Image (cartoon, rainbow, N blue to C red; front, side, top):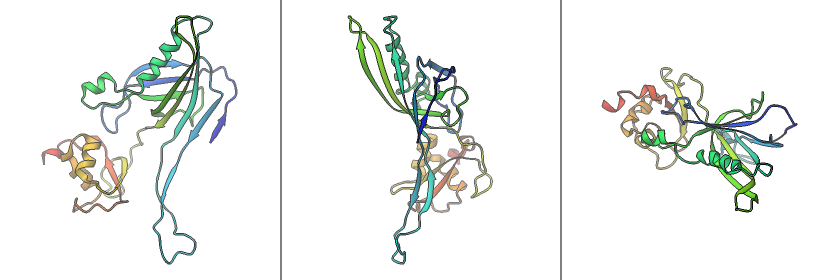
Length: 240
């Protein structure tokens, strides 16, 4: 879906924030903010849904689709940078800010949970394109240089994939846990592996099992949707 954008007095900006310190938490403080020199002329917003079809010999034309889940929003835009009037280092400085969104932050490394910053694009009152996400791709093309080789003009193509925290809700399986995310089981999955990916603690698998009413953790059928509880519910689980 393409969104044609008219010129506006509002200045678009990109904000980099410290990634959440825990699963289900909000992003931390601002790391860097880049106010765009020129507002984008086009924004591309994409969202997908996933469906599964199980072949059936009794189906006429095709099997009925089964809704599996909704994918994140993905925003793509071009950022134009120009320093031909000042011959300054502003182009490279802006690129360096964008590059920070592609590497783990010092704070996340100190926590031993490496994660790159979360990114948010904001432009005036626009709402569909303003969401917390992560930079999934960045491409920089330098098109003009000073006599000393300093880049004076560049176009940065970037894509932001939604990573917003879901609002609190009750787990429909048990009615007692707060679900922060879901996971679709694939071949080779285990509750211990999922707990390690979500919490950094494989012994917390019992929390996921309890939230989904699983009696036998060894029988996970591919395609099953699991509710992953909030991190706050994990305290003490690994000590049982």
